Amino acid sequence: MKLRLGGLVPWSSIDYPGQQAAVLFCSGCPWRCRYCHNSHLWESRSRISWPEVSEFLAKRHGLLDAVVFSGGEPLAQSAAVRSALIEVRRAGFGTAIHTAGVSPRRFAQVLPLVDWVGLDVKGPFSRYAAITQDHRSQDAARESLKMLLASGKPYELRTTVHPALLSHRDLMTLVAELRELGADHLTLKDFRPTGCEDAELKTHYEPWLTPELRRDLRALMPAIELPTP
Image (cartoon, rainbow, N blue to C red; front, side, top):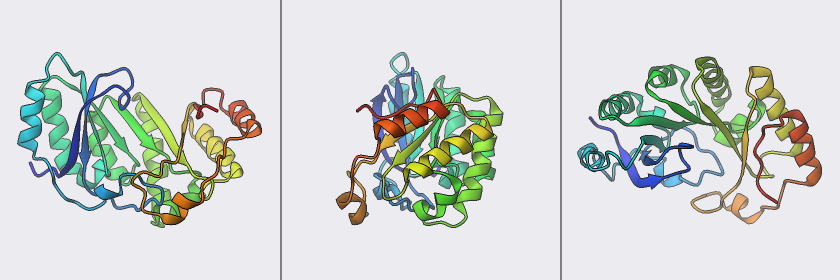
């Protein structure tokens, strides 16, 4: 197996809600999201081997519930990730994936092998190209989102918010689009400057969640999760 991994977190209680999980960070990503805090994983380099991961997991039975494949973008290595998911499941662990849905075809190949999905929704579809620097990203994200919602798999949709990239109107449009597709919950997260390579975003950041926006977003999607004041 030639899965390229940029790192491993041996324990996490937040990357797969309700589960004690190890997190594998897959290297490589075709998108260049301006706010990305894992830009060091954009290139396909390997810092840990799969035999090392297998040895680690063999010692964690009874201590871990699941393994999360994060990134980077796991779908950039879909064949290797698929093989790894099969091995992890055979070893008795649950599985989860963090993805932006960069390829619906590849997403379809791994979706049956995961128990939970964290899908990064970049914004309303009209803003995708400006955020990801890829003009094809809008269509890929839409199809992957539809696939996830149709699958019945437990999921979390989450969006990172920087006011230079997403306006209040954009956020309202995003929630409306998600509701139209059948989603009933979304987590909005604050931009984190750590690891971001975009100097403009790191320099020009202001709080974006006003009381009025909080009220309007909750009115449109009552189950939305928002940053604490």
